[in-house]
Each structure stands twice: as structure tokens, then as C-alpha cells.
Image (tube, rainbow, N blue to C red):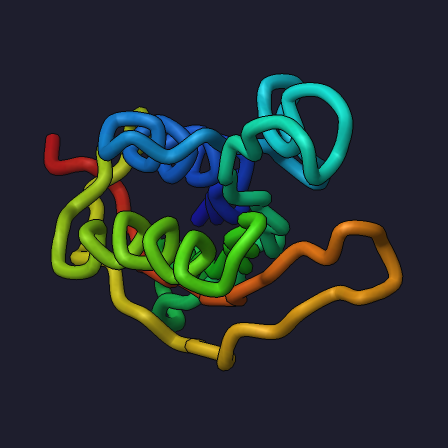
Length: 146
């Protein structure tokens, strides 16, 4: 018997990024996207709200015959805006993915669920301050049907 390795997490992050882009969220991976944030002088120009993905590696799961058949994937999504209301608006778009099945190449996806919803916070260490709202989305994938 030959066991298959655990599914890679990167295609899962790709699927999440594509789905978020599809609902109108500007997305960065591990940092601010190029077009996000202040569009000129901070506080005097428009702020383009965005989300930053901080993906996990995924946890394999299965049975004795194939212990890595499934991958339980989680990703922190940090919503950033100039106002608390703006961060909440980004989070509302992110939450539209809850219950959807994302397309992951070569995998069958279970619906997305929300595993973390932290209250909005304000970062006063930058001027002008920015606001954050942190969510975590999760979903499970298994092998695509033959």
C-alpha cells in the first residue's frame, strides 16, 4: 500500500484569494496589496480598503487506509480600512463565502465556514490610524471523485 502525501495548502489559498477577488475584495498575501491603503498622502487622499491573507499549512486527516485523504485548511483574513465601518464592510464581503464550495484544483471542497470573528480594532501607532477586523475562514477538501 502506498500512501499519498498530504494535499498542498497553496492551491487552497489560491482558491480563497480568487473567491475573495470575485466578491470585490482587494487581497494581499502576507501584506498590503499594491493598490491598497492610502492612495497618496495619508489622511488627505482616498483609502482603498483591503484584506490580507495569512494562510495555515492545513491539517491532514483521514483513516488508517489513507491518513492524509482530507486536508482541513484555515486562513486568517485581516480586513483593513480607514474606518471601523470600512473594515466591517470588507468583512461582510469576506463572509459571503461562508457556505460556498471553493474550486481547488484536483480536490473536492466542502463548504467554507467561519471559525474566528474578532472585534474591530484601531491601530493608533500609525497616523492617521487604520482599523482592522480579523476573521478566520476554514474548509475541508478531499480527493476529487474519479
